[in-house]
Image 1 (cartoon, rainbow, N blue to C red):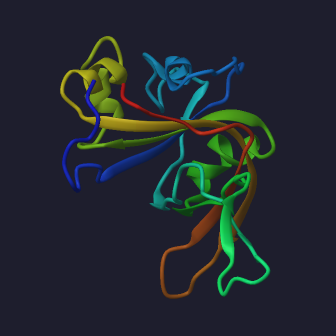
Image 2 (cartoon, rainbow, N blue to C red; image 1 turned 180 degrees about the vertical axis):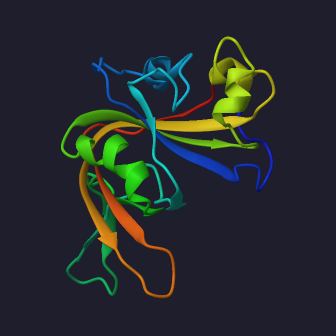
Length: 184
């Protein structure tokens, strides 16, 4: 259970979601409990991994700086306002077969999302080797850092291409604060 400790170690990043009954998440640890012992692509029907992610958005709470003009001063002052929820758009390599049954039906449904950055790939095969699931595999030597939020998939826009892979832009809305960083 260690955070990523070196530059470039988070080369494997995953976007997972828990679509089961949502609880109350006061801490990142509360949210992490929904994923304990589950492996995407197995019998755990409530845990889904976004397939073929090509590009991730920035994750976290953005600053909201407001410029306030002050009479008689050459420059304005800056004050902290209330931060708006960030725009979260994930670009995926669109394979209709992967998205049609796992992701498209979730549009508009509340879910718990997890952005997980790890220092080595987590596949169903590797996780299956660990009888307790991928979480204990990760704590057994895989440095990882996770961020959680409750949100919805708001839209999926398919972008056909004649010269490159077909992609889709998956738009997510954040319905809660970001929780984390947490390590599993």
